[in-house]
Length: 485
Image (cartoon, rainbow, N blue to C red):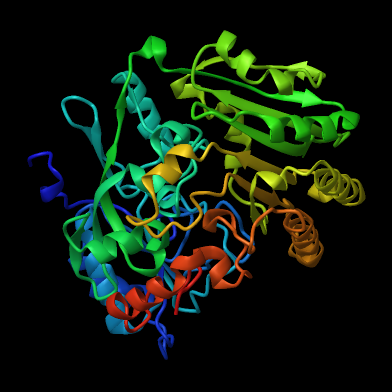
């Protein structure tokens, strides 16, 4: 088939593109009944089971607990599953890699997961500037393929993520200063709607849905495939300077001030991480993780104010594109309970006194509760020049001018610890918001907890999105991921 957007018609879903009817099925079908009614409508290689072993979740806290899992093998399987669920009044959730953690899943007793992990095909055009990806495609597969072909994507740091799910929520990438937000990387997509119809969606075809999907996709449809931008670059130049720089406790305030004062140019980005050394000591540590698209000499000049604070250790180095995300692999471990909380901040949010309060709260938490020693607080500080220049009008992502996004991640095993973990997450979020520098609370949707008012998630775009929701999903089928209705 020709490699053009007009012929786009293939595979996946925006990480958590979910749906749930207004009421659940009165009586759940049996597995045998689901197989009998739905099995003949699916392609060879697909399967239906009562086990979610093939569709694990990153967090077990309030995770969807499906009665059935449909492992699709073709994007053409998705629409028949949606139509079947509508007919039987069964709630459903489509997932690719299962990394989303929102406290908004309500599948009910008969719920069904559409597992799209097998929809992972990836093809480049001849000049390596556009790739067609299946909806279940994992970031790591894209990075590895692009690097070998002397190209790269503007992709999330964690390579275990489903690319489209992360990007359709707005998309934070360490190269976004050059290339724009994740939603700006998508050129066109195929969407299965709430009625089970398959639509081509781009700037020309279904433009209102194009707007809604890029920022609020889980409320409007399941993305089964997409064309995305790629950026050709020789291997020798496809490098970045990055790595962990660790600081002593008494350096926290000057470190935060130095990051605040940085001239954060488009080829830069920096993270701040509070974590522990792990058992047996579980010693808290303050780490900065700078990123620079270029060589070490230029990078060290750009980040000189941070380096001048005086680190305990410096593990920075020039790293090839296919290893940029290696440092984040520990975040990819699935399982455990992780009721994460998020907060988005202006530059003024880099307030030394506030970050001292956050760090002290973190230290108290992991010292008092060693079972949660794997917890962390991660802040990601991005240049926003390119995202702002591209503007909001083409997508529904609302926070292009907000540079700093923080996620608080309690990690533990026992559900009896839920109340304590949630109290910690909410407390740290409140501390961060106390000096966020914004006119109103704002939270990047992929970092949010699920208890936020909708205007904190969708910003000024909320009224328009709610109007579009009535048009494209009048029966409110897609209603699990920060639902608009």
